Length: 354
Ligand SMILES: *Cc1c(COP(=O)(O)O)cnc(C)c1O
Image 1 (cartoon, rainbow, N blue to C red):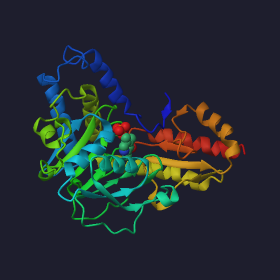
Image 2 (cartoon, protein in one colour):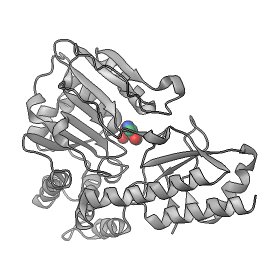
Image 3 (tube, rainbow, N blue to C red):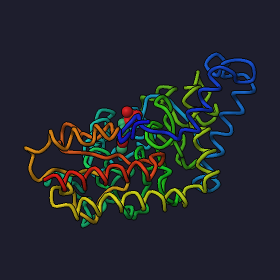
Image 4 (cartoon, rainbow, N blue to C red):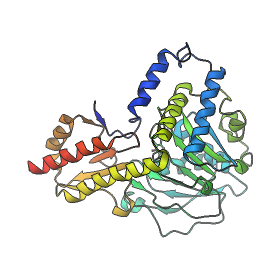
């Protein structure tokens, strides 16, 4: 088996792949790919997929969960449309490519965006901290983990305004207090399941209050939640595999156990990046992501040699995003510690031969 450090779509637990494969051939006598989304067997899957999110994250009462399509990218539009109030103004934190994407889409639906904090001045290598949250806005939006640059919020913005978060690349990786948020959204394909489904966790009291005159049915979270994610055909297979993955997460100790495992993996890799004289990390130490570890070679001319070493060790998905260069080891929930150990061994071996 390869060691998959890809950023997304990415690794899921092997047991989940196996169960999913079995259900492609036999899900109560049909293939999961041919079953009607209105059949009670799939309705039970959807119900369980929703319940398991609530269980895994201790979602308080007064919140609803739904699965839509369109990825986090459509989420940028959906949250802006649904959270728009009379002011039609919102505060955004810009920590990189995805945060910038969210800002762009909010502007497109007519929101006057106040980017009150940004790390663009140093190419998104840190998480802004000394900012003043504006109060003349409808809501605040941020991106908890910066998948491309490798930074992560360790504490979340504190505000009484509605707080919206794109958690695509670190949801279920650590404990969070859902009660602090009004909407959390996440594309499935990092820690949840295969691409196709997008998860929304929504505080019920924000629903149906948009001031937007443009509100297509599909984008209206109120209607989606009332229809229990079945307003139209949901991404059946993606939801099914997300459900299997959440079962697996809970069986293996839940989010708190996962957090400990993830910290162990991240510490191991960052220690090697700091110890090994041939490498350096890309971002501020205190803002380092436990999901996407970005690092550079001190001597770029040695790239070919390092690349052949990790490729020979069965590692895939390690090159950094084209906007950053270097390397990015995505060490999502399902990546085993043993894969990180293989990468660390390769880095040590590279040092020995230099
Ligand atoms: C991957 C990612 C996205 C984009 O997700 P899509 O589902 O492809 O639209 C958005 N935000 C973050 C933080 C991501 O990691």
